[in-house]
Image (cartoon, rainbow, N blue to C red):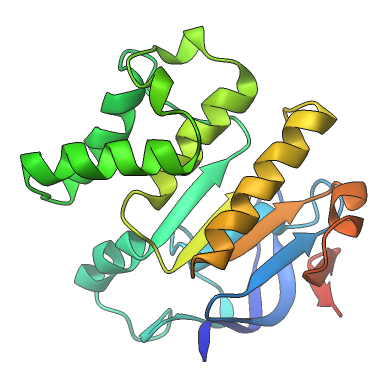
Length: 218
């Protein structure tokens, strides 16, 4: 079953990167690499899936929500179905690891007693529960990215969007993060990983969608 579909999608920026003609679908539970050089439009595509940007032409569908006919109230619901991981981690520097994740769950209205259980569970899933009281600046880059991944999966999303998640990491740590994403995928979460690291892509047998000059190519 398709849970994400982009059909003839175009999005132009006055400045920055745009896309011209994006076409691909994501199956439930699938792992997909979105590859292309810097500036090709990978991050733009992820923003379109997250409905942070809307296409000028074409249609983006995530689950039952369409960029052509969605209601404003549906966007908040949509974003609870998506987890997002960025290259630069984007952790709250004034909160420890536990609070970085708990904050996201509070926003969704989860009960306090359930928040503690969920935070500890996802931190265990990413192998960093022993660092739960550390501040972000006390962590290595790989550890910060593990926290960011834990935060992204805390709401048990259907799809995890990872935007160059290994871009700031050394090769060994990048491999560890990649293996973690694959474990998350095997548990049922679909993953779209945007990257320009072709060596990493070659090591893993997942479907690849290439973007060149704003156009998807099989």
